[in-house]
Length: 128
Image 1 (cartoon, one colour):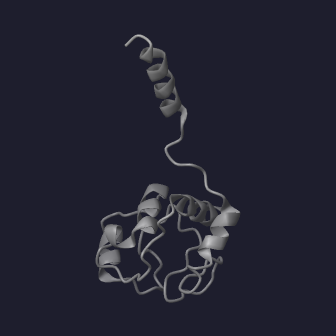
Image 2 (spheres, rainbow, N blue to C red):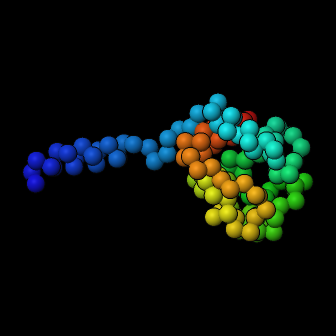
Image 3 (cartoon, helix red, strand yellow):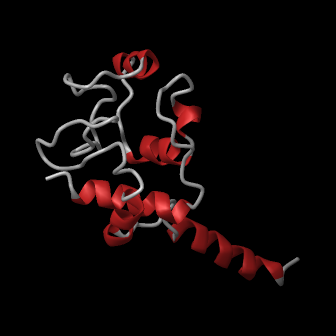
């Protein structure tokens, strides 16, 4: 038992200093985002496509672009205060239907957590 205490202490220290989510790579995220471009743009003042413009989406209230026609479910969630924080985007990008069950986005989600982090990093890099 006493021999395992230093190991336990080292593991606890590692867990305490390890970030919960790794920082993504915006360049890799741009490549992953290319599959999103079929429906979304990310240019400042860009037009909406099949999906809304995602410029500045990180930190924005859901369903807040007045010129886009969101699903009723997405509008309800926006009215209830859903904001696209990194954590909410993480969940949505991994499984959109888990966050917005009756939403209209047909994309099934990104299964690779590193790609999710990369896309979030890319979205953040295009916020300004």
